[in-house]
Image 1 (cartoon, rainbow, N blue to C red):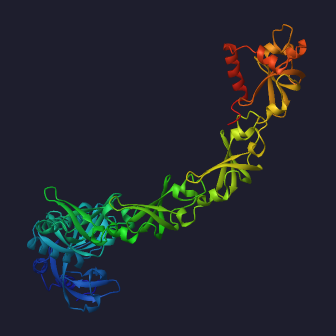
Image 2 (cartoon, rainbow, N blue to C red):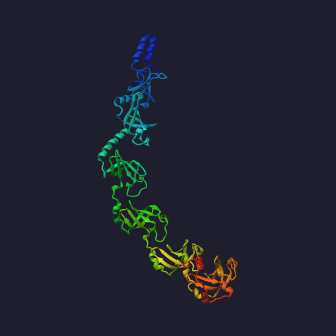
Length: 576
């Protein structure tokens, strides 16, 4: 047998023609007989002639041997010279005059012929996914067949590379004999299987059953679980008696989970599932476990402006209202004391098991200091403290940590008209005050500063007499008269009609603020805290005694009533 570079026997026979040993006709007949069974595109028999480093030399009975790459043979080590192999004759002569043959293509052609002769469209066939291509995957079923991406699974497969090398059953959905092309579907088989499972499940399912399924999809509102041909919804509220923000905190896609059938709508084929229902409702025994007054430990799971929710156990939460955080501190928001995740001790205040509500308290862990305030600070007690806050109606003074008393604006001075506490007080001022009243139930202590001294108006008639001459300084001039300070905090009014014995248009023509003047006292009203003066009487030398003044005092008129209103506006309600 010739080597790949040598000429075959037929060349030797041509040499014999030249020597007159064989005719040309005989030669043509011999060559035709040799090539009669060789046809391009067909599978022919060949014998292994020898092995090279990269090729296997195969003789198909033609004038030259063919070379087949080693990788086309599955078990090269077992090959021996003389072994018979089927090869595909691609070309009797290539550009170099060599026979072109393929073992791999012969195998594929054999497999193709085997498949088309044994399988039809709609049949099932086993195969292994070999690689990912544009639009889908390639599957080895003896030959390469195409698996479109839409036919890989019932739902979209994100990790297609993860399927490479795995064996599955497929359905043949298209055979193209002209192009030697086969299209497969795994999805149709899965859907058929799912339909069978669904029919069986529909015939068996009942409310209250426990079923095991696979988590198929997770949303914000719940989890869809494949029960085997039928999807059920496990709502987030039915996942646990406790608190979760998202279903993914408990389950992940692909998880196997046992659930309870809560509701089944046969017409719409909808199933509601429950996971927490496999366990008893903790609220059924909450009154026994958490009686009123019991101290418990819990975790802060949520904070709202009105309070903090504390989880005592899975599914049992209680509310600590903002008003139950401290006996003494004014808490505007629970975050001033608590944060989510804090482990805190609480006291059970109230339970409403039917409404699944528990009221809890934190301040109840300590003694209420207000229960002792009335004993510690009875009315009349002198206390010292620091101004903590000032409002339009008064100033809050801290008597002890967490205990404030209110100094009402009317209790700051006996004599001065104070419209806002900031006129005489500021934050941080340290001062002394007298306890006026205590209301432990409403957590109120009333304090006074002016009460530290006697009311100068209480004995005014013993110090100042009607009819006597007094001297003072003009403090204020109004449209109806002038106010004259007689002693510290005590003012008298010189009505415009009592200012001068001479005519004038404006009071400022006669008096100015700061002027020292002499006047006669013509009336005293301790209850109303008012003194009426007359400069005019003094100037005219008409110094009258009390009886004469009383006799000459006319009955009140409309003008007097207006004057009274003006005086009240000036002095204000000094008694608070």
